[in-house]
Amino acid sequence: MRQDSEAMQRFAREIDAMRAVPHEAIVPITDHGDDDGCPFVVMRFLPGGSLADYRRRDEAGTAIRNPPGMLHFWLPGVAAALDHIHAKGMLHRDVKPGNIFLDGFLKPYLGDFGIALWAAAMDGCL
Image (cartoon, rainbow, N blue to C red; front, side, top):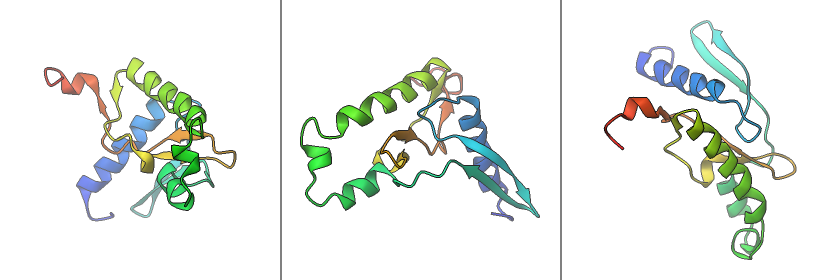
């Protein structure tokens, strides 16, 4: 990424977006910076991986398909994160199982704001 200024700009935009909308159900960024031209970001460690990872590990599919399963636990947190960013004027634009991360207690956190946009930037497009 050191040579690719477009990738550096996308990286910086993602960090700025996540830091602009802190919430208990959004992956928190604790630090970020540049080390000799190589950008880095430090986020909370979420040992549960993503919801997509969890689905793959759950061979029987009971956590996803068996109501109430875990959906009653995951959906309110993700919905609260989306409500929060929408109230701030941001659109995530990439909500999917691979962008919902789980802590050690399987609490969900919305992450990957790489293509998020401020709604004002989409004026006339919605």
